[in-house]
Image 1: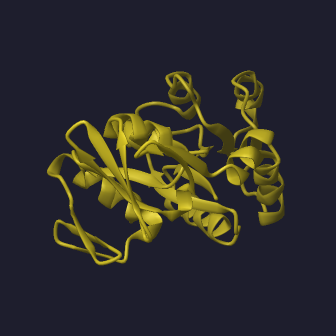
Image 2 (image 1 turned 135 degrees about the horizontal axis):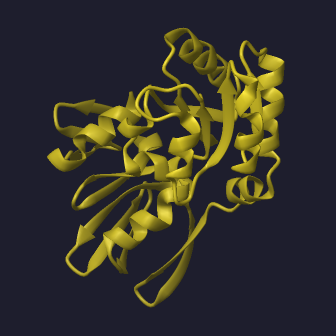
Length: 224
């Protein structure tokens, strides 16, 4: 699944883009923003594709793009053709002139999907864990959550738990390519495994995981 963000200040354009994303089976929208200044760093690190308008409040789209150290793939969506040359100089994938059809949109996102890096990442979801003097291979999709245990982390799947000598911080970085998010100083969870959220508690496979106040805003923004 390719995760994307929409950076667009017009509500009508937001709705069109969101509807196009929703009808494309390999895309998932994880956030919609009207200014790049409001996008959390943690969310920008997870995103694969940014749909970027040019005319934005406070900081225009291309100026915002230039501030990113490791930008995702970018598809510009603009009513103005004048910025196309500058945009392609920033290595954007495509430049969509509003109003654009779903067919034109699909052509642009297919270019992203055909990129070898995305193909390899979708195929290679294997994780290698060294636990109890044994090297295990598991799929990232099978992991429910990770919990910090002093100098170890406990990697929990539905069938088994693996105690690994490592830090939660390291594994949080390793899992940036997948649908994991830190929700507490001691927990990183697989978003796909959430069964319900109640108050400051997340429920995953009969397990209750607390939401830390530091992480709550980012977590709620992503799941919404």
